Length: 339
Image 1: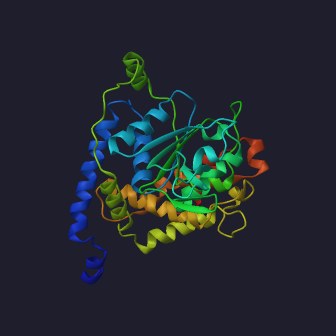
Image 2: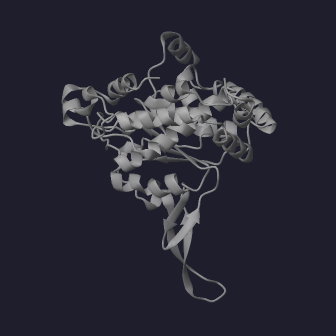
Image 3: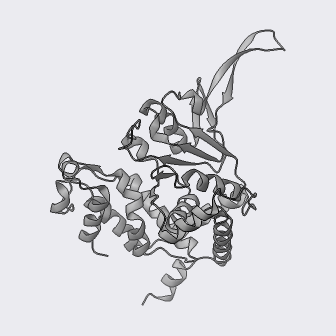
């Protein structure tokens, strides 16, 4: 049993206890608003909220017609965030995302000058719709904004308004006209959220409902309140044993490390890096906070290891030829790391 000094040090401040209750209430109100338009998909929405309150970016993977776009736009409306949507197409150019400089006359001097016109990335919530239908050159236009929350164009650097999140939808790469996202792009996403077909009861409701409701949603949080909740998430205590568990999972995912289990070693070319570990820890903090808990557990980490790490694993030819996916490999990794 920990002594009183240790227990006091690990306990959240009183203000944070109040903030945790407020966050739990905000979560319930958000779910209520989103479910005005989205039927079912409880796990998908839970992961979306983990990503949002963890301050990360999310990649939604699924076939067309599963309401991925509607879910993200509904969330933006319920949060009163400035929302932009970009439809990624083969002819989309980087400047169509970040913005560009235009030449104009200066009425004061009569001279011509360049003026930067911001692109749709200058918003709070950017929906990159069907991100893998545009070539990697254009996909890379999001790299700096997703990592640094800023854009460099025409010799100038411009800050993006906080909060800033990118939620992208991706069609399965087996479909026609898709480009695989580069590893550097995938690594910018905190979570990969797989959107599957609804169960029979939810699908019955969706079909009977016809078109989704167009009634406006009630804003639940302001951008400033969202930022405050995200800061609270980062203050959730993380025991050293949980950090050790995250590191153990990371090292078990790397084929060149001694900790990698033998049955996994031949299935991977690259494993997860330190950035993945940082994001796994933050996601675990967000999961704990959204459930009203003031400490992160190993169970939080293991529950989110798949969504955080699977898209960062680079499979070997052996795995691809045998049809062994990242989900199956992640299961083997977790089985080799004791809870």
